[in-house]
Length: 313
Image (cartoon, rainbow, N blue to C red):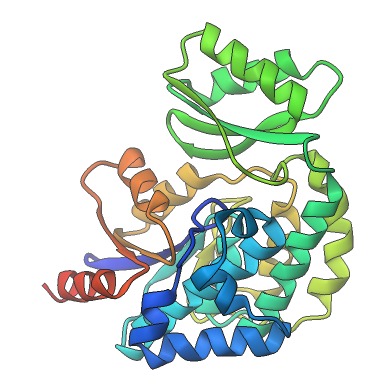
């Protein structure tokens, strides 16, 4: 990669909000077509859920996952129509599916049906209330890992997202997460935030999901990508469709190595990141990992114009 290289970042669970994608669909025919395609493919009005659904409905992971994917691809299609081509992409958790749609490894419809099933399986894997996640800010990865070992006792508890130098998300059984939160406060965490999620993602409680998701992914066509996607599990660039498929299976119960991913992309020459889809969490994480990086957030028409103008300049 050379100077001036930009990469796409695609958000995952937690970036959803009522009304996501509404203004894009209203103003851009490319976006509107994506939502229409989603409604037809799923046989239900996903667009209505995204545009007018309640926060509670959108929080259910079998709704969240296809909703975020669709809103992300709706924004992606506008950028593609204007000739933008990144040197690489990455997606946070669910966002890896959006990244693989962007580089042509997966078709949008295949990815959409798969993430709806992924969300359903994740919801079924752990009864509501038995699993939890929390963000721990102000402690190192080593400190959080030690806390998880101490607080787990006979339950599941482990780091789930390595989001930045001092932002680690943990996941596991609810009681174990609560013990870890208390211990983190005791040893000086700056903030400890319980996350509003409906399942404990990226920990061993999700292992049965990978087993049930495998035949679904193996039934889909995975093509070699037109540019590399940095995977969550290894933080390394992948363009092989076969490797991408295995990475999606592994990431279900493995932690998201987001800090390593961003650092690897910067080391490869990326100097600008465009967050494609709802929310702006990933842009904030990038700046926390490396100050001074250029970031743009593209989830609404004004964001698209700002990104186009910034890249042109």
